[in-house]
Length: 411
Image 1 (cartoon, rainbow, N blue to C red):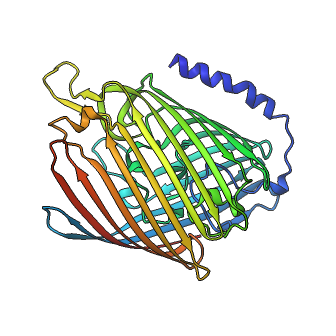
Image 2: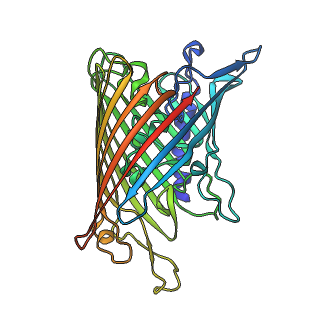
């Protein structure tokens, strides 16, 4: 805990210096790096008569139908409201002080409710101090600056969900302090630097106090200038870039004494574990074409965690450790129909892959999708077919696939 307090103390001088910077409030639109999802327009807004309070209301809904066919299992289908979100954002007192609140109401968004634990409805609750166009200081619970696809909203994806590697190796929402320095330029080299000091325990943590903490640092480079219409924050070239645009980025994350098997997410660990995560990604867009490549890993010497610290014969849980690659390519036709392909490979840490109790496979997944954009990402129809091949330690394999239709609407 002393280390965490020390790091927070180091951020205070920077914040005090930033208070003296001036801001052109006319240009202070809610284009904040940590806002939880892409939106077309500004939602439904209201501003008080004295202009000291602003509230924007936005919602989005994802309804989907999935047909599953897993080897050695009965074929099933599932109809569900996958995501139902309500978001409020604006400012209070001064446009330099902004807030964002996002709530989730769909069952899979909230997760499994356990006795004695609160309903996991709060996704984002953060205050941002934005002294000028270059600096953002954030306090509260929101997304950490992780992999590009994780930072992008689930409503701004081309396929119906993020990759298997994003689901297992990425970092997610956490409570803490973040500081961003943004230096994007329209037609010249630009960059962003993003840092975070957080609890490492994920959103809405309700357990006992601990000395765990997480450190995150991210660098984003824009060698050919910034993307049109904030296009680094949504998949596909909906802006139909007139000149090639490229983003290269990397994130390093250290979770010290993590209490979950995937850091901010996953199953509970009785024996805390410390580990590192590295995320590298690149995006290129031009004239309707969009490509993305990503690498993610989670590393530590010993991934096994005792289920009972006082009984070494109790068995083990584990930290989900390993590495993965994603490759994604798409083309958007002038008619706003789009085709997308993605290949993901996931390799487990040998200790977990070879462990006879866990039997965790290496996986290769292929996805093919088609979209019709009615109103950019906020009103679209999606279809996807995905096949994955799981390879187990002693040579056996398992073939699974699903077909999915999804409808999304929001403001």
